[in-house]
Image (cartoon, rainbow, N blue to C red; front, top):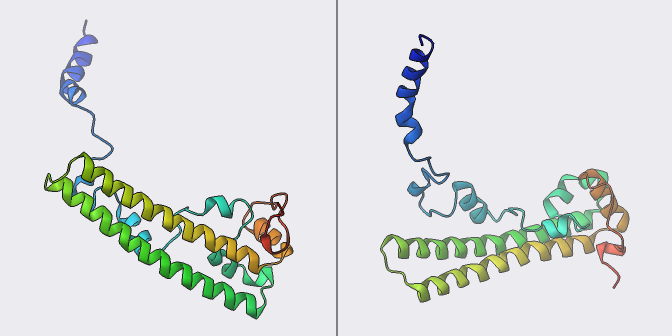
Amino acid sequence: MRRMVPVLAILAAVAPALAQAPESPYAGQQHRMIKSLSAEDMRDLTEGRGMGLAKAAELNGYPGMIHVLELAEPLQLTPDQRAATEALFHRMQAEARRLGAAILQAESELEQRFQHRHIDLASLQAATAAIAILQGKLRAVHLAAHLEQAALLTPAQVAEYGRRRGYHSTPAGVQHGGHRRH
């Protein structure tokens, strides 16, 4: 019985804490400017970063510009390839920043509608559809840039890129300039 007294005392002390509702994984996020976006998400959209939007290209043998430039020496980029890659990156990033700003604006407007309770099903559907279109355009910009980048490289450079990035092989069917034969 003596052993049970300390156990009961401990249980009595922790019972109120155990009875409380578990904290939501969203706790603290209610203070964000746009609740659905983290500070990192907002930075990525503002700066035109990839955010994993081009994984379908990257992981299937279509290199990304930044990584091509980082690997310029081992890939033995020619001066023309380097210049074309840099130009492609700047064009892609400018368009990604423009679309990122539009997404942030649309998300902010959706946020305001919820905050001010000026939302109904029709306005919700219109706002989310508009955001989805912008997100799709942003992803297409990133993916299209990978297509263009692959066309700037030789098959040997694409294969070396894959090895250097840890992919070890280029998918079957990749031909000259990264294009697939159909």
